[in-house]
Image (cartoon, rainbow, N blue to C red):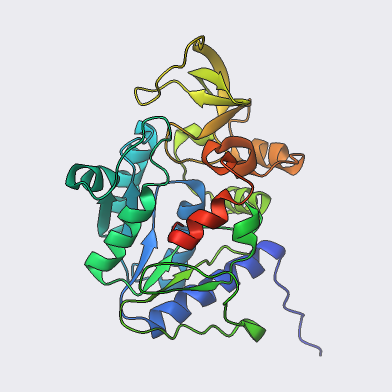
Length: 302
C-alpha cells in the first residue's frame, strides 16, 4: 500500500524555511539577537522563532532600536510580549545618541535615519554577531537585493555588489571579529503571506494594525497620525478618520490608510487587492530619493 503524500502548504513551506534559518543561526553563531519593534513582521518573526525552539524559549535576546517617537500602543504591546515570551529586552535609544552628541537631530527630517547609529552601537556594545531582521524582499527595491545572510563589515556597512551565493539554501555566516551578519528569515514572504499567517496562527498584534478612529493630518499624499511628536505645518488641520496602519515605525513618518478592517481576515481581503507596498504607501522616509533606502542600508540601516 502506497504511503500518503506529504505536502506542505505555501505558508507551511515559508514557515519551515524560516525555522531552518533560525536553527542554522543558533547552531553557528555565538551571540545572535532578534530586532523587535512590536510591529507585525517582527511579531511573526518572534512567533516562528518560538516554534523553532519550543519547548525552550528562543536562545537569544530581542533588541528594539528606539527612536523615542513611538506609538504608545506599540510600546505597551512590546513590553507585554517580551514578558509573555520570557525574553530579555535590549533597548538601544536614539535619544541617548542625541544627548551624547553622537548624532544631530533635524526636527524637520524625523529620527528614522538616526536609528543607524543606535543600531550599530547596540550591536557593538553587546558584541552581537548575527542580527535577525524582519525585512522582506517585496517591501522595497533595495530590500529585494538582499540575501538571507547579509554580510556587514566592521563599520556595519552593506555592499550590494559583494554578496555571497546561497545555492540550495546553504548559508555562509563566516565573519571576522567586529563584523556581523544580518539575517532575514522572512525574505521570501509577502505582505499578504504575513497577514495570512497571522490569521492562520492567531498571532497577536498591536491594536493600531486594525481599524480605529484617530486624529490625522494630510501631508505629502499620506495620512499621518496627529501625535505629540508631530509638528503641524502652516495650513495643516487635524481631523478624525477611521484608519489602520500597514506598518509601524517612527510616528512622525509612518502613515496610515483609511480602512474598516477589524480582523486579520478583513485585512487579508484588503491587502489582496492592494497594488502598493506598505512602505511605498505609508513611509515618508522612503520618499527622500529613488535610492533612499539603499543609501541608508549601505550605511548600516535595517
